[in-house]
Length: 130
Image (cartoon, rainbow, N blue to C red; front, side):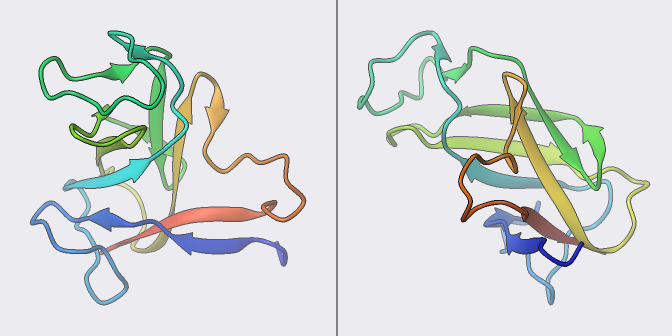
């Protein structure tokens, strides 16, 4: 579709290096990326309060990650010491194609690529896979 814009996700490959066109992640490996807007946490946290390391604060609503349209194994928790920043680690499915691949985080039934803003429609977060 002509109006789709790819936005490279800020993601780290399993070895801690930045995911990029020149440094794609291997299929079957894990990537880590960050997101905001996950909503309530379990256990609850006061708005504006930095996340703790013990206990880790996980999304209260169900979440999932899809890479290349395939739902995959993932974990998520607020990043300790940060306010409202969720760290997500997901496995790249072994059967996705190589190249630029769509990355979608869904929390509480709302996909990360969904937007009500006329300026944000058609944007897709992507990662690189080899």
